[in-house]
Amino acid sequence: MRLAQVIGPVVATRKNRALDAATLLLTQPVDRGGQPVGGAHLAVDSVGAGVGDLVLLVLDGRAAAAAIGSRAAPVDAAIVGIVDPIDPVR
Image (cartoon, rainbow, N blue to C red; front, side, top):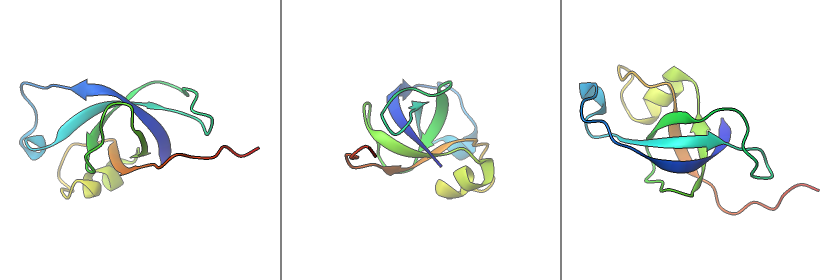
């Protein structure tokens, strides 16, 4: 699991049927201090996250598909939690 910030919605006019009801969001992994780490990921939202939210991101295909309740869904990343404010470790 990784921390990530939701940076925007993704609209797909056509997608796999297993994802018809799914919300797609673009996420940017971040470190504990909130600084971007690596590239952005397209993720399926399973918790109702919104732009600007700090989220828990699963980057394992099987776990991500299970998070949305469909092991057959072609998913590589899923948002599985919204994180409350964090006090950085000093």
